[in-house]
Length: 425
Image 1 (cartoon, helix red, strand yellow):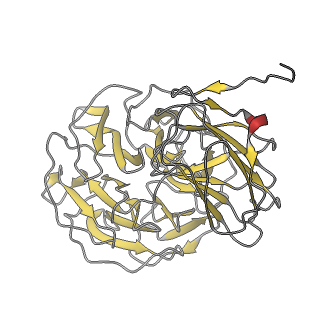
Image 2 (cartoon, rainbow, N blue to C red):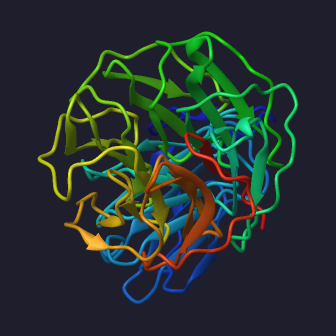
């Protein structure tokens, strides 16, 4: 026998899978909006005029390989999306969105098995990176807080549907009252509340919230006990807590299964009473404002890997005890806070905090903001001038416009916590 023998991969069925050198490239360039592909093949994808969604095979064996090429170097203008067709992609379930948006990229993926699924093994652009984003949040809830007009400590919750309607109070089981907690989504469709204070003092207690809005029982331990912290989602399916009483600049990561990690050494100005929002639609986030001993307007970006950056020079009125929320799927805002103000600062999809504008609605502090309905936000309850708790809410549309006051449904409260949850409307 003559010729060159190259390395090949045996699949579990015993069939030899082609290596990259043995990939059979389709001669037809794909220009359409959809494409179904098969293992062992390569495809030229031209997105000059439109995005293209590539559907992978519905079944695969370890060693199956597919190559996708940016034919016209236009993925940076119109992205190439991958539908993993029920199989995992880089360890993430098919409910996540996989986007390639770097011009000139070549995606060479191999199936590694059920756990990690399809995995990129090479590329030809050094800045190349898959953007994996979680499905949009549809519902939200607030929990706990304090009412000093007679009701005192509250353990009730209020669910918020995908139309922004706040439901009346409902009870929770196993979760105790506390104030000054942080809340964020994790795992794509669930939420976590963490830290805060009971009458006995600051805590490191946390509660997981299911994708049906059920608040779980208290779990203690992990990280420095504190209150007046803030939390936000990052990296599509994880979350991070940052800052709090002390003040402090420690942070704690939350895995996509809701596990809270130990303290990470602080970066940025130690502060409490800060707020947060996601931005960019690609797993990045931002912490801003707060109290270092005096109020500040500095901000700190969070990468899609949960790394907190150093301080960015502040924009907007320095204040604390404000609300932050994501709107429009890739932008955010900070609103209210301070001495019962209605200052508003929009955050662009590149994380730039804008100067003050005036928001509609009653100025207040110690309030919370949450995303809902896929691309909108809601601000609920808080403390108004005269130190009176309120239960009013304000809807934020997908352009970042804060609406007028909506009459209270929830028991008036402040120092409560909120978060978005569920991908189902």
